[in-house]
Length: 269
Figure 1 (cartoon, rainbow, N blue to C red):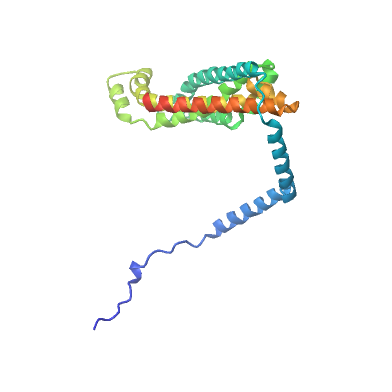
Figure 2: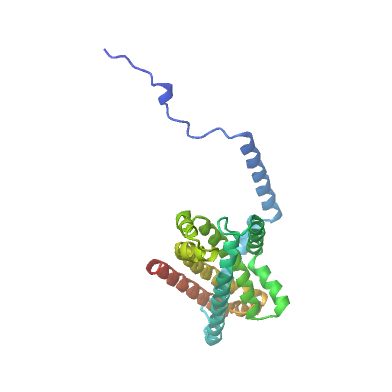
C-alpha cells in the first residue's frame, strides 16, 4: 500500500506574479493619475467621439470619388517630395559618418569630443522635423530648400546615433592588428572599421530614406515644399475629393518605396 508523498517545497512552481515593490506601486499610481488627468484635460467624452465619427463619415462621403483633375500637379509635387527626401538623406548620411566616428567610444579622439558630439546628435534627434522646417523656413524662406535642410538635420540625428553604436560593436582584433603594423587612425578606420560596418550603415541609410519620405510629406504643411503644400491647400479649401487623390498618391509612393527598400536590403545587403 503506497503512501501519498507531499511534493517538496523546493520543487514547487514559482508564483505566476511577483508582489509589486513599493516603488512599482508609486510609479503605477502616478501613471494612473496622469492618465486620468490627461483624459480630463483632453475632454475625451462620448459626445465628442460620436460627433467626430459623424464628421468623419461626412468627410469620407464628400471625398469619394477622388478627383483626378489636377493629377499632373499632384504628380509634380509628389516628385518634388521625393527629391526633398533623397537630397536631404544623402547629405544627412554623408554628414552623419564623421559625427558617428567622433561619437563612438573606440574612434573618438578624446572623451570630451565624444560627449559634445553625442549631445549635438541627441539635440538634432530630439527636435522634431517640423520644428526644423519652421526654423529653416524663417532662415531661407518658403520652398523645398527648407525641407531639404530639415531632412538633413533630422537624418544626422537619426543615422549618426545608429552608426556610432555599430562602430562601437566592431571587434577590436582587426583594428589592433593594423595598429601593430604602424597604421594610422584613418588607415585603421578605412581598413578595419568601415568594411565591417558598411552593411549596417547601408541598411540604416535605407531606413532613413523611408523615414524622410514620410517626413517630407508633412513638411509641406508648414511651407517647406512638396506634396504637403497641395494637401494643405486642398483641405483649407474643403476640396476633399482632391485631398483624397493626394492621400492616395502619397500612400502609393510611400508603400512603393518601402517595398523597393526591402528588396534592396534582401538582395544587396
